[in-house]
Length: 111
Image (tube, rainbow, N blue to C red):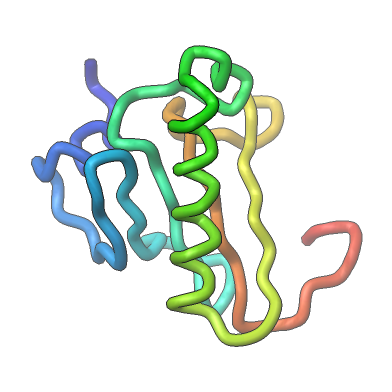
């Protein structure tokens, strides 16, 4: 498989990591869309949130807990969590990832 996030999770490609355990890796985005922009990925390949049924509830819950822990440890104030599902929604890497964005006020709609 030629998945860049799988290679980051395996340690084959370096990333500016802020968190790592057996189930998830969090690292700073190379093209930040906010003053704080961190990605959280599962260490095993899951294409998108649409495929979350492939994992058990404990694994899915652990991934969300990592998102909350990483945000609490790295962002002051409010933050936004985003995941895109499919190319039409802007998913550029077909590996489940959560964007944690913070460090500035966000309006609605997102943009």
